[in-house]
Image 1 (cartoon, rainbow, N blue to C red):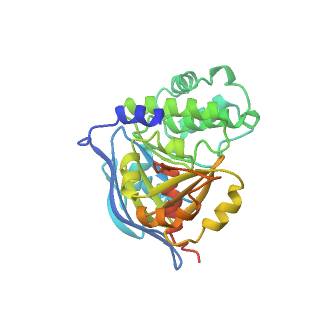
Image 2 (cartoon, rainbow, N blue to C red; image 1 turned 90 degrees about the vertical axis):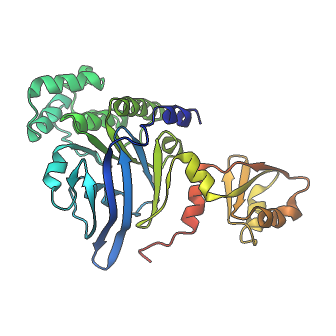
Length: 320
């Protein structure tokens, strides 16, 4: 939780300027509603985590914010511009890092950044490219082909390209998927430095430790916004009761516990099981027959992962 404590101390004040202020945002593809009347407010300098299972509409929502898709319903502003009528202006001030590496693998790093700088008509382009290479630690590799980079270095190049035009809002769509732990940590250090300098960041992720590094988070499941707030607010708001159990043959115990009245989730965590439910007394009554040797039980604090597993359990796939 050290990362979460660090992020909480540098959070923007509650009265900071709203960079994103939208309500009722809805997107349909045919008969399918993939984003269902979502409202959201994000303050300047905030790192806002956007979480949820695959196919839940996170990427679609980001694309509507930055002007790449037009909502079918809803209203609001991004960077002070109307998201329905001023999408071209929004695009000029937003950096968007997609899930998939989308730069030219047969160009070197310097050439890729120069190309992006041309698109955005960046003043003093050569100097801007040089500064970007230095800032992201890419200068020594500037002549290396992008296709020869490892996942972590591709990530740095993509971040540099997203920042080359000095955006006010950075949208990151699962930027750390497939990179090693050190590259993830270095990436987050850079994100916190950018936020401290006033850049607003919205990031989608599946990693719970990354969610805890955000100032605030929102959880979307199959197009619906289920919860939002600080990590502490989201965990306390779920009101889950959790017990941790250790002992022999835990898979067999898990099978016995599942579907018992009062037990919502039975999830393996290393050498233990986390058994959780929304009603503390009902949960305790359900596990009481097994609260004896050879099992050891301890009441535990619910984690962010416990909460999200619970939320997923109550969500209905909108493609079914």
